[in-house]
Length: 214
Image (cartoon, rainbow, N blue to C red):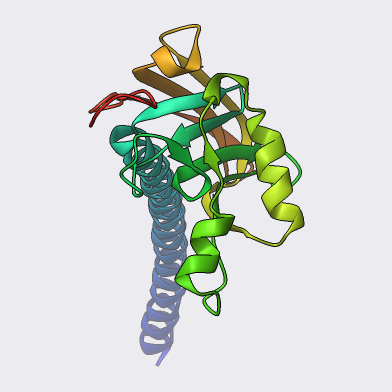
């Protein structure tokens, strides 16, 4: 009987040791899994941020390029804005209000906007043609004032090009706006409490000054 009791006590002792070892191993494995999952989560988050940033940067570059590449010429440019003669839709070789695009950075909203003249659908074609101001002497036109004038009459539509912008800088390859054929932009995009710089360099594909034959 004594030998059986001793044997049983030894077996209970081994079970306790095994239990402690099992708990220790489980704790170590659990800790390793937790560390691995944390690393995976950090990697996934970093990859997501990178993808999001690349998408936003690529979209910004694409939108700027789509305006610049098809424009005829630059009418006005500042560090944070540019006025483009986008097309000669009236086919007269002169600039009309409906052919202009004003691209501006609004620091209050952190948005780069494209503004353009848009007439009410209820207007007749004759009324639209009368309201579509023609600019013959483009060298002496105050283009921001033209935009403000149409805004006052409620004839301006706006499209957001890029949002979450903290800074924008626009430069051209010439001093006189109408001589510019290459436009470079640099902007800081906000992303996950950080900023990423996005740059574009786009040329006007078919450069044409007002008054020149198309």
